[in-house]
Length: 152
Image 1 (cartoon, helix red, strand yellow):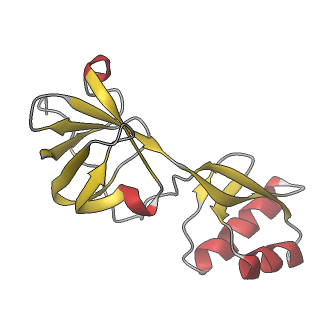
Image 2 (cartoon, rainbow, N blue to C red; image 1 turned 30 degrees about the horizontal axis):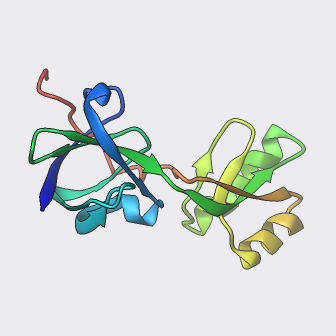
């Protein structure tokens, strides 16, 4: 079985050499060691030195010298918008106060679909819309940035 023991961030690996893709939901993209299957049905072992979050466009270096492109699977999310930037900031604070994974964008926040949180947000004045989209929430403040490549 092929083994993937190295991740390179999007733009830092030879994407033209990708032999295929692996599409994973957010929870599946935060791993260290797991048996996975490519989108073409080929099994491989993800065997990283430490747990890491795989992002859309990242490359997994396989033991045979080839690469796989990571794709973020669409998930059931809630798009949170507000009538003003100040209200959107307030909503972000309430989500953060509950330690919820959130994808923060200039005009919206994406969170996992949760009816209890949706009711809270609506009560605070948010406009909500259910969407299917890839989910890439903010990383924790102590996550740090990994070193990339070999040119450091």
